[in-house]
Image (tube, rainbow over all chains, first blue to last red; front, side, top):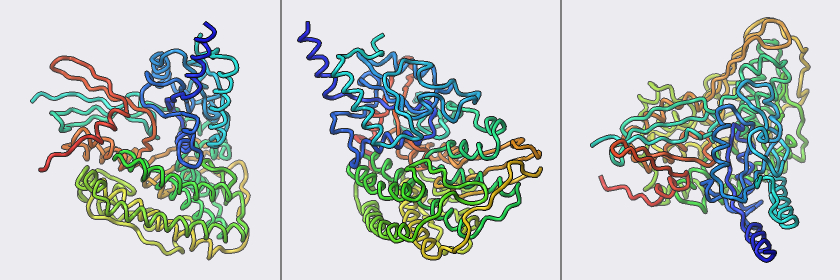
Length: 152
Length: 391
């Protein structure tokens, strides 16, 4: 059993696939997430691949405050992802609602809707910060097995 | 033949103005399209009324992170009209510099994404690598890569040093060479031409009739550029050309952006060479007098309008924003009519709606009532593998 869980952690941390979802961001975080994939920052060296479908993804990268229109869709995307799954909130808006607190169309941070494993603050965070956040999440998984809150 | 409904992105918040498109298709041909706007409505215009003028500045640049400078510039100009202040000449030139740097980064971004969508991943990676040059410049100038918080009501926040000017000119010369190379690739590459020429046509008459703005209109030969026709910042003193293309297809609209990038590099160099000396900012009080202010700015995607109504308190009574992608929606709906399903991504990206993220497409077959879900990646794959029949 221990061998199996070790194998699972190994498989999970070697090549996690990410899904990027924008829940109402101003696009600044989105272009920094994309910039993290391009040659200078190159997050692919961790085996990370950007996927288009939630059914293929291990990590959900969410940017932006959650708007009322997007909340049910975010929940549906999260439910479509296979276990084990993890969520990274990129940007101050995704962490807490940021500059859009008090807007009538905005619910708040991502954790109002789905559980979040890693917060990356910044408006927008630099691609280096995003790469570090993902690397730290992988380290956490390696250390503590796959005990992310996403398994709840 | 019966029509099939194809829905593109109810959960499609990748745009600045998120849209859902319902395509009515006959076989591979789109016959009609129905847009639905407002999925990521955050209530920003109402939020302006709850914040004072300085706080609104921070909100304005978060309307759109990509063209944040255009929004703060437009916001500041509308507010300055209410305050009745004159911006110092050095600040006007610095505003033009940061505005053009912002345009270069936005255009390179969308040229890269356009290359990716037609299946040219290498070009996408190369362009995004060279885009880092201008991101570095923005960071040196303002302290942040994307959201710059550089422009304020009455001027700009930071001055530039002579060392920065020297370094910036060197870096821009390097970038210019690269962009000239990409221009050559875009004109000569047979794959790009096969995918983009004669796709998503918009005639000059239609562009005027449907009120298209920015490179979408200039790609169809409509000679309208706010920088030329309603000069703001320092554009009445800086010489530049308005880039026009007559073809009106996807290829021409992207080429228009490449040429505008080259123009923007020249504008930045000229402005840095002819920078006047003096103050960079005049202080304004918290409370403006009652009145109205309207400002137009040529954002990377087209004409941007901010309109403010002040009742003499520290908060605006009403703030109205009209963004370029919103103005281009009727034009893009017209382009879709008669196109192939597989051309949809290229046409959509040619108006620059910030297409960068996960998408889903639902294909609903009316005859069998069968619902097929496609991801954005699958749609891209379909587009790449699609061979257009010889007409």
